[in-house]
Amino acid sequence: MRVLLFGRLGDLAGWRERAFDPPPRTLAALKALISAADPVLGEALAGKGVQAAVDRVLVRGDAALAAGAEVAFLPPMSGG
Amino acid sequence: MTVRLTTGRFDPGAELTAFCAGRTESGAVASFVGIARGEGGAATALELQAYPGFTEAEIGKMAEAATQRFSLHDALIVHRHGAIAPGEAIVMVATASAHRREAFEACDYLMDYLKSRAPFWKKEHGPRGPRWVEPTARDLDDIARWD
Image 1 (cartoon, rainbow over the protein chains, first blue to last red):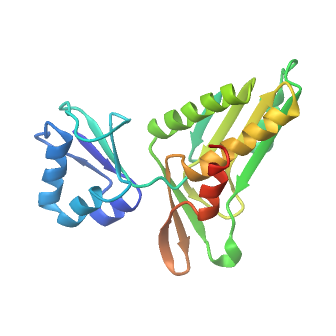
Image 2: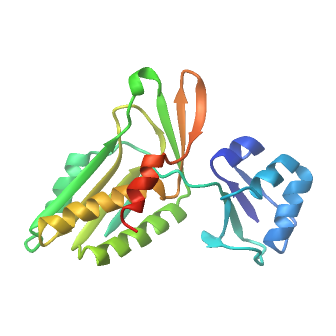
Image 3: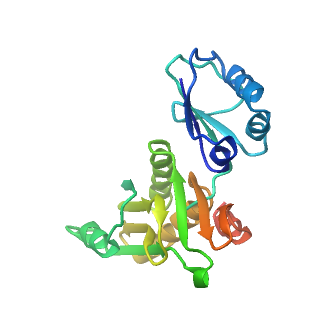
């Protein structure tokens, strides 16, 4: 599973892309895993306006994740 | 309808010429080019982060809706991402319709959308270091005009 961080989230975490193996089975489990390793990033992911996309489609709430899923965390979009 | 992201410089004049070519039924083409401002030295470079695949798809949905709303014959959106120096074109929108009003309005609408809601993350690099930029109150007011 590939996890991507955009905008200020990438600066905060110190990475923009990371592979998760073994892959968590849900978005909530992925967030819990990230929070356990980096509580500051975990808090930022739960922050206002941060959205998640699974395989480039926005999801609301929790979602099941396939082993090869691409999960992106998107802070509020700034426009171009 | 075409939505294209590019990390390289593009030539707005050549894009417009190509967009106009061969049109015999569109009486109107309107266009807009957005250029990176230097802010008198305060902004040395702009960095736009896109999510390739997702960003084009989201802009495409909006352009499709605009095509319906303004009865466009066609629309072109070219958008840079990556590092952009002051003076370089960031974005170009061109719209084609039967008559001018729809082309002007759709171009205005698409730019308001692109400046406020399009999936980009913007970082300005200035003398005091980099900072992430969010839409301004004016950008949000501009897009709210169309709701």
